[in-house]
Image 1 (tube, helix red, strand yellow):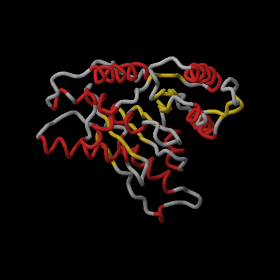
Image 2: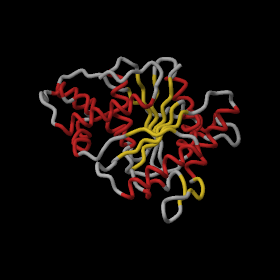
Image 3: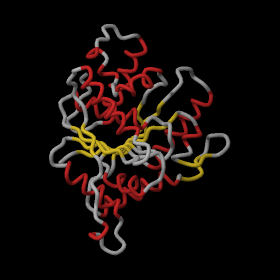
Image 4: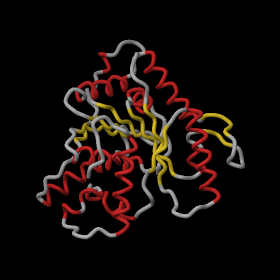
Length: 269
């Protein structure tokens, strides 16, 4: 059965689609069969990323490993029992169709609280939560005092993950491996950054997630999206010499994949 990876965060701009696309493409390039679902039914950033890739590869006459993105199937309302939610059925039907024929199913959630996102979190074997390295985004995980030193209580998102964990436990499924990915970290040591490190470490022990390094802020990510490319594709499209920033970004991706501890995966790319 496929291992289900959910990329979730209820705030926009944290790099969910960038993480989703690079991870899904890295797994595909390592020989794994990967299917993907974009649950942001309005904006569809991840879905468009994959579509951009297919269009560019067709125009360039290239055949590069890629994830397969799928739409949620339509469900007739007449088939629902009283009180049943149509989105539950659409997502479960999609996963049921894909899980026997893939090594991984990657689900990219919207940057808001939706029923689809809530259900997806309960399906996660691995949950990845990208987080911009600031206390503005830290509020996604927990409320903290004005000095950034004391955790006052969990956030609505953390409580949703807790509920998802409870549902999985009741169903006899293995626990969610929750990884918070710190994105856009500054290179310099600053007081606010050090406070953030202490706070997120303290919270990780309190509510049970692992911490992994993410991507630094780089122009290259914005340039890759229109063509649907990732850092791993640059040499395949004729870039003979990677600059220092691109080499560093590839290493960040390698470090992230290693930190996830996905079954049967070694960051060999």
